[in-house]
Amino acid sequence: MLQPPGRTVKSLRISVTESCNLNCFFCHREWNPPSSNHMGLNEVRKIVEVASSLGVENVKITGGEPLVRKDVSSMVRAISPLVREVSLVTNGVLLGKYASDLKDAGLSRVNVNLPTLNSSKYSWITGGGDVSKVLNGINAALEAGLNPVKINMVVLRGVNEQDVGEMLDYACSMGAVLQLIELQPIPGDEQVFEKFHVDLDNIEKSIASESTGRTLNRTGQRPVYRVSRNRGEVLVEIVSPTGNPEFCSRCSKLRITCDGRLKPCLLRNDNLLDIVGLIRSGADEDALKKRFMEAVALKKPYWEKPQ
Image 1 (tube, helix red, strand yellow):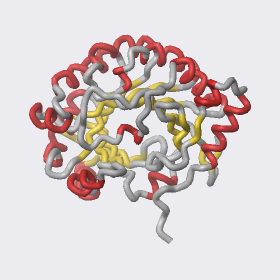
Image 2 (cartoon, helix red, strand yellow):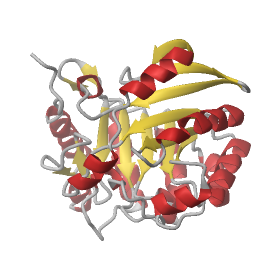
Image 3 (cartoon, helix red, strand yellow):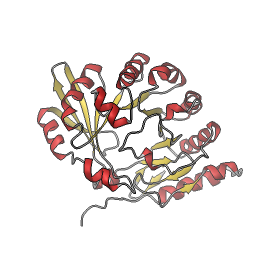
Image 4 (cartoon, one colour):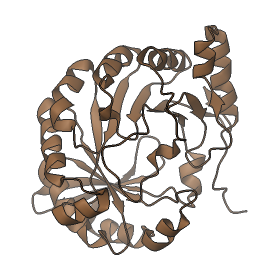
């Protein structure tokens, strides 16, 4: 699927639920609109089948928390033969229970959201979560071979900025990749962003000063640093979507909301296109492909480059 200016859409992020077993105060839940009309397994499979025929190679399953759905392993099993890679974003609470089954079903790797290693701070951030369950989940993922495990750490002003060094050491000790993620604004709740947002420039400069090498991730959207620690080396990705024209100009993703709408842009909800409705009405594959191409045509930079 080509999009202006000649980039190819290779990745699809599919939200399978807006429900979650935690209540992180900063979470946007992929900007999913409230819905009780979630896609079924066969509908997800059909969407991936059509996307694959148009050149999509990578699928990431997201939420909410995808593991609260009982059929996620079956979903992975259904779609993994259709694409090169299926990965999953999780808070890790249920990962210890499902890691082995997910690997057997064809899951390649996981991203685990982990804002801090401090148990009391983690409980406060997540509305009562138990960090030990997440750490157990990461161990289970590594044992199952879901590599590389990526740890997603949203950096929050006055909350976990000082925990970055500890998280670097932890990721290094586990052989995981650390993603330092900039807080994103939540529509309708600007106060959270204003209070807790951290510009990652200074943190990135500190990481860069310790780095033995810098590359770009495979989409070219963000820098990846190789950092030496006492226990070896760790890869650190800096994820800064807010106000970042490169994040937009190099975007090669489409998103699917949990109620089956194509979402061309992470930061917009005003240009969604229904696709699951077409499937439910019996539309043929050409109509589904056309709807995908309509969504691709709507992709344009949210953060424009300065003139």
